Length: 76
Image (tube, rainbow, N blue to C red; front, side, top):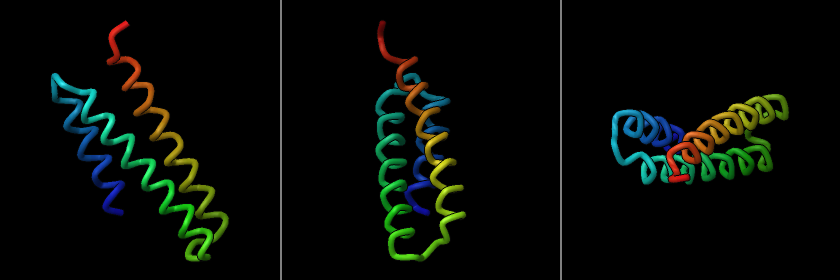
């Protein structure tokens, strides 16, 4: 939960910052941490398969969006 909130904070900060890359890299790192924690929750049977799959798809989409945004801010 904390990792996901930090992803939200970093992406909002990046939207209003001139220096987006460090914030987006941090958000990307935190979404990776959230993915690992979510996988652990599933492996310890704390969440059902259906919930795990739904959460994993959502985090994958968020990761793709952050990755695309990060690539778009890289110098060509």
